[in-house]
Amino acid sequence: MLRNLALNPVTNVFKTMFNKYSNALIEKPYKTKMLTAAVLTIGCDGICQTVIEKKKLTKNYDYRRTLNLILIGTFISAPLCHLWYMKGAPAICQAVSKNTKLYPYISMVADQTLIATGSLSVFLFLSEYMKEFKVNDATHNVKRKFRHAIMANWKVWPPIILINFLIIPPHFRVFFTNFIGFFWGIYLSYFQYNT
Image 1 (tube, helix red, strand yellow):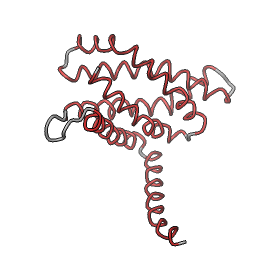
Image 2 (image 1 turned 180 degrees about the vertical axis):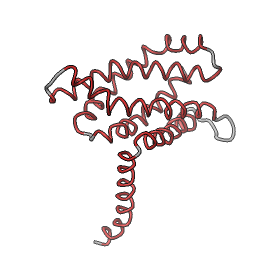
Image 3 (image 1 turned 120 degrees about the vertical axis):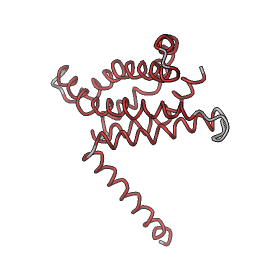
């Protein structure tokens, strides 16, 4: 009984935060998803650099790298994901089939063939390009790393994307993929800057 009393204020705070976030996703979807992407990107690359790569914040931490990843996540990935989940996937499903029970499966296949390949290519290109603004280096980076990245992607994402389309409400789909993608982001950061 005492334990439940102690948890109630904490539970209420989380419920309030969740409700505010949920409302923001509906009322200001782009702004909310872009801000979420920025915060998660800071965490992903921060963990990658400090925990995995053992860099010190005051010594050899690459702040420009984090900034570049924030820019990609905030201004490219988040808006495109929003458009994909809210408009693109439903449009493809309606064009392919009238059977709504197939929509999650059609969406997953389209996501993993169109969106995953495109977003990984863009990520590999831009994260390399933003280092020194050399198109040839960025193009070579995509050619060199894409196959490995997409194979790793296909080992992780198809069931997650299917769950996303099967049970997650549409306005939470980007948040769900961002949450799972936090760990994927750590991997991508390491993969891009250490291979």
